[in-house]
Image 1 (cartoon, helix red, strand yellow):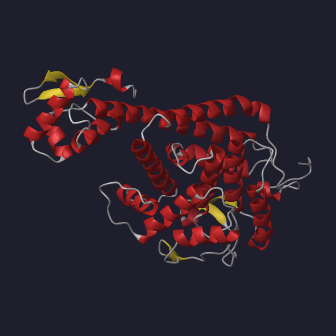
Image 2 (cartoon, helix red, strand yellow):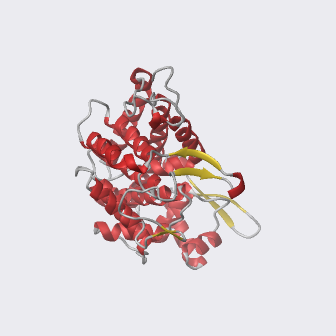
Length: 378
């Protein structure tokens, strides 16, 4: 950028869209990302087919739910999981009905990852947009679907605050320039680039959300494009980590970094550093969860009938990831939906297998805990 080239937003730069970044500065972090991805994919290969399939289903479900959650849209996790399973033809239990809204989001996410090798073009993006807004409404407001915005109500702006105290965080390029801007972006995305494919995923995410080509849904589509690029980088249609889940955990930092970048120069090193860091944490968290999957797999092999029952599987998963307080037979019965006698049989079987340990006894009931050193899930 020339010293006299003042601009408020990045796309107004004289050199737009000639992105620059400091690769040597990013290289240590990029190497960590590649090593973590390699370890995760190597660990996945040790799983049986069914466990790998279930892991992929869980991660794609998490990705879909959290990408919408970032935008303040809450989807039912069970409905999303069921919609993905039906669309992929997976033979899993506990399926529930799903809405048109859920099916639309799932259709986009599945197409982006399962068909990642196919070219991305305007028609495909229009299909994703139509799937996201199948009713033609965003909330209570009618929107233009399956085509780029026309700015008939004024420039596309990202705004927060009440009507009398609005803050404009970002203003996108004018609609009149969108077709040519999108042509440049899509040509770049579909061509082989002399840059690391993970770097390309981070740049694709930023570039698309900066163009903001649709009236609504740009964030979710940008993350789907990022997932598509990561699927290409992994050379795999299955997702075994969820970047959107990590972004949701760091949502404020995500939006702050985007705003700073979109008001900065074409040097996007800072954005890519944040993106790579979030991706590294996403992969590390996925590897952590996978240790639990491998642990359960080993327990299955030791079970009297060669497999834990569904109640034991559910409760062990909760104990490893999201259980609070002390475990008792009463809590087991309530959470697993069984009698206390059945709960006690389940628990005693796991104690005999060396999975659970009685840790004490209150006035009302005995208390149990997972033997963590064997679980190796932190």
